[in-house]
Image (tube, rainbow, N blue to C red; front, top):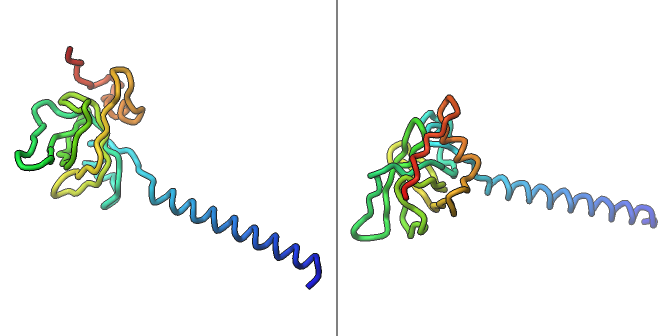
Amino acid sequence: MTRRQRRMMAVAALVLGAGTAAALALVAFQSNLIYFYSPSEILEGELPAQARVRLGGIVEEGSVERSATDTTVTFRLADCDKAIPVRYSGILPDLFREGQGIVAIGTYDTQTGFSAEEVLAKHDENYMPPELEASLKDKAGMSCMPVART
């Protein structure tokens, strides 16, 4: 094997290795990609079956129910038009309360509702994820956020 052939083999191995690394990175990225949906979008059937998604909305007033035996909490998460029942087992963030904007990560089943694996609450009065803020506007572009309690 000549010196030129060895060099070409090394370049080919390098290109093959880089291509394999890029393909593995894309597969890992795709499997960890989580899309944002509003309650209206999920109830209109835009969600792929058993997909892990982020669901954003406002916790409906009077909908929070805590289990007496464990850390399971059920509540309804709403946007301007529709609401979805959410079930979460675990410790909720300190900022979680009725009328609060939150994002829940989990899966949706038409029979049982949304099963959350993680619940995130906004961290101050001024911040809200852009996707959640957009989903909380009606067709005229007006916010349907409840008035903040003082």
